[in-house]
Length: 157
Ligand code: DAT
Ligand code: MG
Image 1: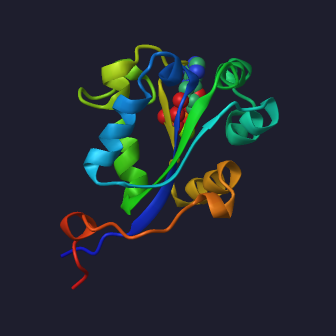
Image 2: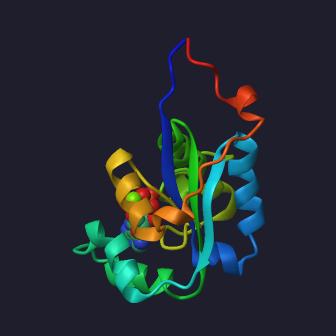
């Protein structure tokens, strides 16, 4: 058996998801997959946090619009934990351009435009650690056992 790496990742259900009343339907997908919710909050983001979160895109032509969008209304920030959580969540979200996202992914099912593509997720271990630290104080990330984990996370051999 390949021992999976337990990871934590940051997800944002962006303002379009909140405005379109999709928060519950998106959240249930991650929950049903077996990912553990270790952080959750509704945030009205300020410009400084938005610019820090998307700093890697600072020189892109869409940067200004991206920041305006992300501060346009509240969003929901999630910290999710599980085996290979970073790549699992990226796969569940689907391709950045929703028209290229595989059917059954969140972006394919709920979005049409790249600028309003419903969800964000960290893209690697380094960005996950940095983004979790940016969005959550240490005390807001909660470690707790779940009885169902014995059905979801295979015991290491
Ligand atoms: P992802 O969110 O899949 O990690 P990314 O990091 O390349 O994608 O881009 C961050 C966000 O920026 C993306 O979710 C939506 C927006 N974006 C990307 N490319 C864009 C474009 N060509 N026009 C408008 N917005 C864009
Ligand atoms: Mg990205």
